[in-house]
Image (tube, rainbow, N blue to C red; front, side, top):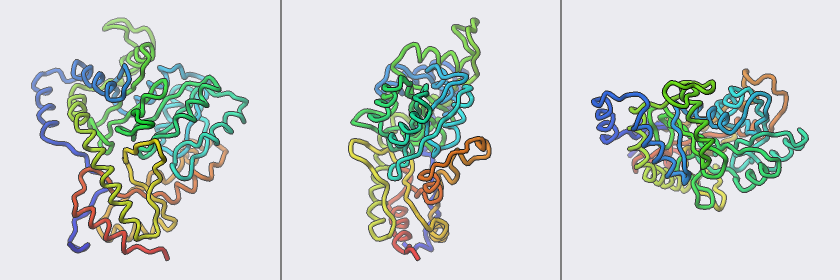
Length: 367
């Protein structure tokens, strides 16, 4: 198939099937549309998939991050160490708690929080840190041994931002099972979706209870509100989609890994390097991200051949207007923001799509 004849290949394509549609209709017909037993079942099933004891569903990934932080005791005046190279929700959730996000630079190969830089950032503050929030960026687990060791040394909580990492593993265990709590997103482009939604997971019953109250108006029961909370609840409609998607997650991730392997093979004929996958981790490939020093030219080339691309993220958090009070520089993150480019890796890719992407990449040369 010629490149000229090939259809456009999108950067993302939510995989919604007949089973999801059937389950949504069942919920609609039941009349029980809001938070209820469908959500409770999804919470249990997702927690089991993460090898933890408790799950608390939320309206979206940002709400899940906010609730996870609050449930772990993060509040006014606290400090949370995290990465500047992520979607802005990572740091926003910290600020919603009244806490201060403190940034440390990233590893140039994995794009995740660099434990060495994290230690330096903590020591500059005299050891003052209340929580560490690593992001498993693009579906690649962060260095959880180093991060959890650092947290233990400085008596800090660990909250995993696993918004992009459904199905990823570190040392054989699912992400979300290492910290005091973790937060996932079910946005349509994620490895599994509920349309919009999020989930907090934890092994600690009290943390789960605090998160459950926070997303439900601070309720202990139907009429007793023991603390200030939000309406961050998930609906039964969303949970019905999520329960089906969860059953399909392993196939989705396997397809992403197969597509990533094909992309890496295609890159052998180009000046581009494939993503780094350290030993001991299983990448979930929410994104397949390469470095392209001449990014604009590569984007234009792929666009001409019908291959969509994405930049995640073109501006580090500390350079966003909402963070203009941050006067530090993070050169590794800043360079990554100038060079990263993500290629289609989603499960909807066909053999013809993979061939077309490979053909397009084979024609690209650095000037």
